[in-house]
View 1 (cartoon, rainbow over the protein chains, first blue to last red):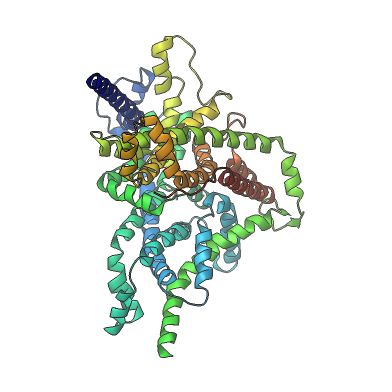
View 2 (view 1 turned 120 degrees about the vertical axis):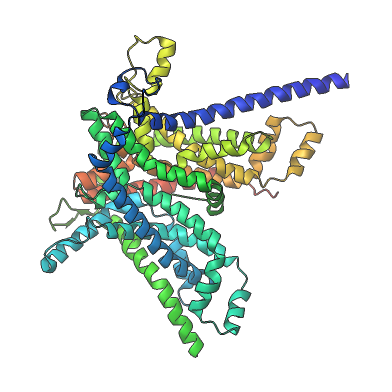
Length: 297
Length: 297
């Protein structure tokens, strides 16, 4: 009797488990198929798009990528994206690391105030303030034109990178301070006994220990800078100066009037490939970092 | 005395760059949003006239604003409920059961989160394409190829749900990872003693898992509101541009259109202020409604 009940339970257990497998695999398919489909479509010829969407490509039509790279200028947009992302990441590290260190390890006049301010900054979202930023830079250009003869703030990759850095500051400082606070005070004490100054202590003792958090920060911000397009499309208005996602948006619009599916999908692959490669290399770090930080845009 | 001076200088140099960037690109634009909302300011002339709350009264008489409000609210409700339920269920499946390939599944589920919203919009525009899209191709298997294609992005009644589909697809992995992280902190002993008392899976889910990760659930509910308002803007810009005929216009896309494209900055910023206050109020209400006694593990 008891035995019978047990086997019944283990049968229902097995059923339940296979049901779970089915459901989870279904979700995995729902996520993989659209992405994979875009990859496959990127090597199809334009005529192949008119038939059944399930048909596999007849060959490897690399011309799509050449077209996207040259004709649609995705190549030069990629260079722009690389420049902006690199500058913004570099600036962010140079600016946020010392600030987070000082804010979390020193007591000084205004330390509570600035800690609270940067925390409050977490709630400011770019989408609300992108237009005021545009107007501010536009006014700056008007003022500068008077004595320089040409505008310098809008349509400037460096300024865009600077805005990206500023947007990333609150979250980056929040994440780094959390880590710095967890370190024992003895490190600085020992360093000061050995005669190291504040700057040397920070650069040679604290920074190397913070490496895991720094890696997390680089990963997160690389993704958000590389994928960003609202600020980029607002602040870069001359067509030659686009970043990759804005270029893709243009390809999408162009595709509606003149049918160039292949080129559009190739551009799409160009935008997502770097992030996918990075993700596959470091996926464990990323999901760990996410739960550590707890929030994102 | 000498030490104190050195320390002050060190703090100053570390903090100043961050503070300057923060003030210039976050604080001043934020203040400007509120200030400009009380001005009538059209276009590139310097002519600004203070109009008090006129922008706001105009706003509340605008049909377009109510349409954007309605669409945003619908998206918040639909996206939150579906994403929340699915993410919670899938997270508990993945963390409660011993499954093969668990890690691989988790890696796959997180993929949408690393893609640019432009990329996701492009992929979904292709999936929703009436003639060559995947979705109609799948439906045609059931309803026969001759039937009229569904216009996923062209039908005013459907388009908002198509949009939420893409948004749910994007968000689900992120919340899953969040819930899994907090479920990992629930001690195994609780489940073991529940097993001894003969509790089933459902019972364990509702009376152990949910109450113990309640704090985390509450936090994510706030995220849901804020991120749906922001993400819907990103998706609309890249996917539908508010159309057809305003049926996917959301809060921030309406703001951006009025302010940037239409050059009525004051009016646009008034929309921003209202949306900001609305999201705060909604988050506060949700927070109050979901408040419960804190449970310890």
